[in-house]
Image (cartoon, rainbow, N blue to C red; front, side):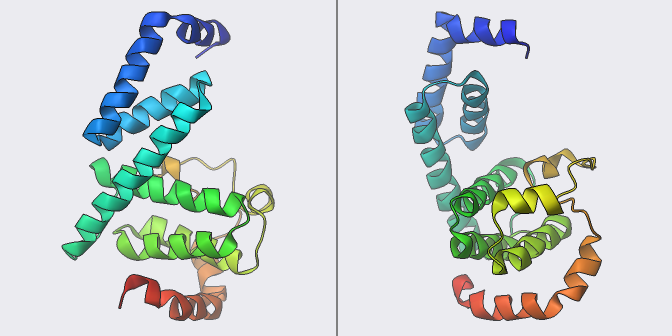
Length: 193
C-alpha cells in the first residue's frame, strides 16, 4: 500500500466503520482468522492503540483456550488453518516477552510451543531460540547478529516465524545439544508430565 492509499483508508469513514464492526464481531465470534486480518489492517493503518491491544488480547485468549482444547485431546498442532494462527499468537507472545527482557518467560513459551507442534522446521528453530535465551541475549542483538535477514522463506506458513539463521540450524543444535538437553530437563515440568 502506498502513502496515498493508506491516507485514503485512514480517512474513509465507511471503511473505518467496517473495520471497527469487523473487529467487534470477530472478537465476539472468536474467529482467529478474522481477528488477525483485522489486527494486521489496524496495524498497517496505525489506528487506535487501545483497540489494537484489546483485539490482540482477545487473539491471545482465543489461542490459549483453543490450544488447551487441542492438547486435552492429546493432539499436536499442525501449521495449517486456525492452528497456524494459534501458534503464531503464542509465538508473538513469546517474542513480546523477549523484547521486554523476560528471557525466562520467552524461553518457557518457546519450549512449550516446540513440544506441542508437529513441524520439524519450526521445532528446530524454536530450539535454537531456547539456546540463545539461556544467555539472555537482547532480542535486537539476536536479530541483528544471528538472523539471516536476506534468506527467502520457502513456505509462506513460516513467514510468521524466525527460522533462517546465519549458520546451519542442525550443526548449531548438534554443537549445543548439552545446553538444550539441560534446558529440556529443567523445563519439562511445564508440559505436565
